[in-house]
Each structure stands twice: as C-alpha cells, then as structure tokens.
Amino acid sequence: MGAHISVPMYQRSLPQRYRLVGLKCQKCGKINFPPKGTCKYCRASTEFIEVPLSGKGYVYTYTIIAGGGAPPEFTDQALIQGSYPVAIIQLEEGPRIMAQLVEVEREEIKIGLPVEAVFRRIYEEEGVIRYGYKFRPVVPPCKP
Amino acid sequence: MTMGIQSYGVYLPYLRIKADEYVKAWGACAAGISEKTVPDFDEDSITMSVAAAREILDLTPQATKNIAFLAVASTSFPYVEKATSTTLIQALGLNDNIFTSEHTTSTAAGLEALLAAWRYLETQKEFGKTALITVADAPQARAWDTLEHGLGAGAVAFLLTKENPIAVMEGASSAAQESLGERYRRTGETAVHDLGVREYTSETFLELCRRAAQNLLKELGRSPGDYHYLIVGQHDARLPQTLGRKLGFEEEKIKPGLLYSSIGDTGAASALLSLAHILDQARPEEKILLLAYGSGAKAIALSLKVTAEIADHRPTHTVNYWLERKKYLDYTRYLKVRRQIV
Image (tube, rainbow over all chains, first blue to last red; front, side, top):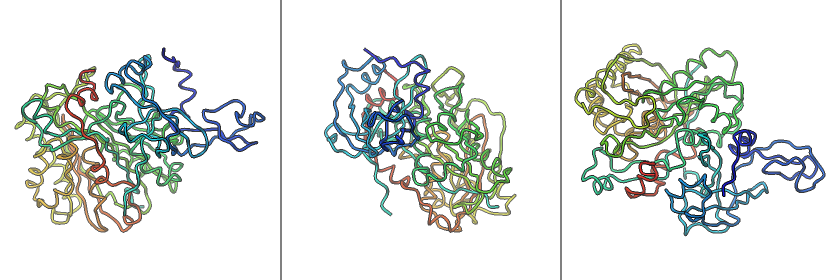
C-alpha cells in the first residue's frame, strides 16, 4: 500500500524536503525534523526558529526493499533497480530520518557509514515530479 | 567594475557506460567516445543543476544572500511548461525576490544563460550583488538511433561578480542564421533527432563558429596567438578540432578542454563544463576563447582572461575528480536507467 501525499501537503513540506529545513526549539534547543507544532523533545514549547540542516550524518540502520515490496509510487524504481536500500540516517544535528541510499554497493552499506544528502527525484504522482532528499556516501574533497 | 566569474562548481553523474557496451550490443559504437556519463533514473537536469550549484554554495554559504539573478539552461528540462528556476530557489534557499531567466531549445543555451546574467549584473548599481548560472543537460534519443550513442550528462554552475573575478569576461560575439536539418526535437517528443546529413551540418557548424570567433577577435584586436586555450562545445569527437585548425589554433590549445571522449555530448553544458575543466588548470593572465554552438543555428564566442584571484577560489571537486568517481553499467542496465525499456 502506498502513502498518498497530496500536492498541497507536499507543497507545504517543500523546505524540509528540498533542503532539510528543521525547527530549533527555543526552550530546549533541540532540533525537530520534520517540523512539529509542539517540540517533540520537551513538549513544552511551540516557539521555534528555522535552521537548515547540514545533510551530513551516518547510517543508523538500513534495510533492502525487494522488488515486490516496493510501494506503488516506487514500482518504476523497483523495475529498474530490482531492489534498493532504505536507511534511517542519524543526522549531525540530532534528528533521525528515513531516506533512500544512492551510489553505494550493497556490501558497502554498514551501520555507521558516513553519508550526505543529495537532491533527487523521489517519485511522480498526478503528473507532478516529487523532488526530495536521498543520501550518498560522503564525497570527500579533492586533495590539493 | 570588472565583470567575471567569481567561482564555479561541477557535477558529473556517478554512472558510466563504455563504448565497448555499444559494440557488444550493436556491433559498433557510432560516437567517438571511450565512455560517457549516465544520469541515474532519479536524476534530471534539475537535480544535476542543484548538485553543481551546491558545489559553490556549500563552500561559500554566505554567497547565497547576495545572489540577485538566477539563470538556468538545459535542452532537457523535465517540464516544457512550469518554471524550473523556482525548484532551484527552494532547493538552494535563494532569495525569493530574485530575477530569473530560463534558456533552452539549443545547446547554445548554456552560454546564453551566462550572457543573460552578465547583462543583468551590468545594469545593477548596488554593490556586492552576484548572479548564479546553472547549466545541466541529459539529452535523450531513441535507443536505435546512432545519435544516442554519444549522449551523456553533466552540470556546471557559475557565480558571476563585478568585483575581483577569477576570470574576467572580456567580450562576446554571436553568429545566428536559420538553418534546417540539424539536431531537433519537436514539442511533445523526448528524443532528439537529426537527418543524418553530416557534411551539411558540419559546414554550418564550422561557418557560424568561425564567424562568431573572428568577429570577437576583431573587436578585441586579438589573434589566435594571444590565446592559451580554445574551448568548443563538443557534440561529436572531431568537429571541435577541425574548427580549431581552421581558426589557426594549435592542437595543444584545444586538447586541454576536450571532455567528449570520457563524458560524451553533454548538450548545453558541454562548452561550460570544458570551461570549468580549463579553470581547474589555468594560471593568472591566461586567455580563453570559448565557443558554444546550437543547432538551428547559432554560435556564440566568449573571451575570458584568468586573474590572480584564481589561486584562492579553487572548487572542492575538480572535473578530473568527478571523472574518476564512477561506476560502470552494462548496456541492459543502461537501457533501464535511461528508461528506454521501463
């Protein structure tokens, strides 16, 4: 079964989907991602400031979605790739989020693998391309 | 005021296919490539534009707030109607009051975007404003069309400034004339075509590029001997070098900019990816003549001069770095990733 997300709902969440904008609680200082009405950590504040997250983190845990197990919006992807990895990413700033992994061999995926966010097509629905984040192993800078 | 490039960023997809795979599948590879870049199934000209722009803005996040103009270019935008620049504004966190301009319909679009940004900045009196240009392409053709063999993918982004550029833009010149039968893609189609009349289209390419280049040289009072590099958009393996010879440039001035044999035809991004590759290696005071060509047909020439600033503004990842970071696909997998059979 797929999780239908309507265009208006997707539209409202664009800052978090396109560039990982989180909400920093003004009372306890923790970062809520995805954004919440009330801080999910201290449950005592609705005052936040927006903070773009770095997109850096590591694989907290992961699984492989086999072809037959893909939700309908990912049917094309399952046809192309056969199966694909999905991980819980522990972000530098604290939150843990679920995302696909790209540009990684199956045997390279390990708990603790350093990863960074990339901007990709997630799926299409109602003719609209839904862009968002996936994660790839950190691409280190060139050596000078 | 010295108009020019402040910084640049490059992105090449991780996936590659070797010419050998075409030989195995079709008996021959029709393009003069040894391998080429392949966009993954979840990449397009927008995602690659974001990736190239982030190469700049991750290194200098403070630059984001000064961007007053965004120009985007590609022959393969995922939407024919719906703004593309707005996806980048959201993904990069740019100011929501910036002016935008979108360039498409020929492989000259990348350089047109650069010129549009340049002209915009020239009109701005405010100090410190910059313009961002992203150029990305992943042209498609039908799997049974030999035109398909050479088509690659890649992206490049530039930040233009009026103060202390790493490369000064000295002048530009254009040659445009109605020309039929070259590469085209009609509305509603996803595949580019040509009529396979190579001699005829080569003639137009050589003639228009020559006119644009010679007009610019005349305007600037220069000769080929004044330049260290000649960059030509590479949509096949041979024409850029033929053009270079006809213009009177030595082989060693053309070779450093050639990327075709390792990434293929990157459409609107080709000439500017090669510019990034040259900037990776260029030294202060060196001069660059750049030519971009688009079917239909037009040629644009741009003259650049590298400054001493270049030493302090090297990108995090050079073109050579991206060239080395890769994974090979076999032809069947390639057809799936490019959505030819899925």
